[in-house]
Length: 181
Image (cartoon, rainbow, N blue to C red):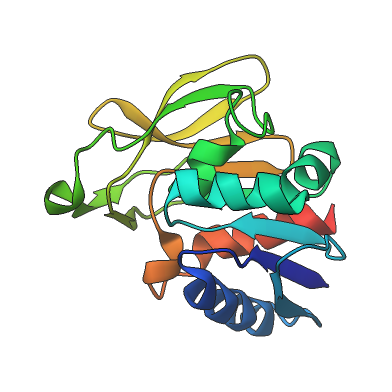
């Protein structure tokens, strides 16, 4: 199994590291690889970073069109969540508001309840977006302060927070389980 991490900007090394850790924990043969222009992977993670910068570079390199056309499982965290919405890549039937929790100084950590997880998950929110609407087949998996912070549509996950900045592999485990299907 090859799990690609979009390597334009953002938390690339953190995602590569936690994917490798998760593959090992789950006894899955595979590796995490940086993706710059090819989608020769079994799944893709679009990391946090600066969504405008990532979007511009994806368009310039043609990667944006490749991602729009793929049926690969995709997980977007923070800026990746923004890019997965209807206005950008259109990978999920949802609307997202950038920096909805505020700027850098309003960043925070909080325990959140995620559907399917027995224990709460410690989320790291950095200039975090919010999913303002989930339409059609897009299911809400978690809210914080009555705002949507995690959603799923088919084999795609969008998160307002940064699971790669914790040692908790449960979200990456869930994402890898979507790849196997």
